Image 1 (cartoon, rainbow, N blue to C red):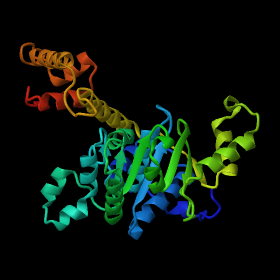
Image 2: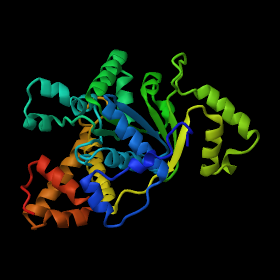
Image 3: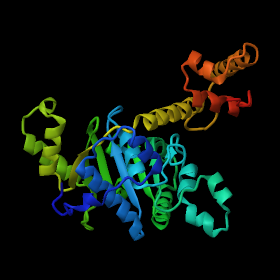
Image 4: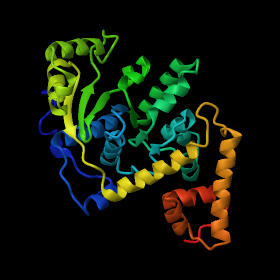
Length: 336
């Protein structure tokens, strides 16, 4: 860990989220000391009238979402999988999540704020598929103005925003320059953390070229496949000016992990019926496929007495997803 960080800061760590605490106490596990330290750093930062942006990169299945969700629960007492995650993010939804103080100043009631999904100051917002926003923004001529507005808004709202993305380099230079921390999943459950440079004269706050050259020089002719994740972190700590720490991330409690996967599947199912660029339904053939699926569900429920639970078992679609789809299509009213 970076020697400039107070070694005892982790002692201020505590579990503040009631939902997480309830599930955690059913099957307690140990938290990495460095993870505790990182949580305290993030929690404290936004309470000094600042924002916090965290990018989390890694290959599919390495635990990016688990890591950002874990940080969300540990940094935000009100974090929930239903309200704080943008599963299929849009620019409009992202702005609405951030703009609590702005809407409050306009005289909006608590009910209106809740309807818009606006989250209170110090909230943690999880942009689960940040790459989708980046792809949309590539076509937006006002990207620089938007970024300026987004970051200024987040600062005034004292929000923590976590972006899950496959590769940090996929993020444009404007995005990278504004990130405070870069978490990379070296392997499942093991993360390295780098911090943005404080050198105001540096164009690239992450020293990507310098750190890459230092890394290659350090390993010499050693093959990448011979370097373990732990060795890789050790090398980074020696060659990267931005290296801060590494930590192990435990898996979310079973009930929360299950809920997250069900919610994600529900949103992915819904999103798969849309074209990412136009937000319109896809081909007529695909439309017919979805109509046939919903018609079959309707017949099984109305004519054969299937409950939503039995339908979920038959189709292998999680029950929350079945309920959501049927309500949206106004096929049935929930009776269980």
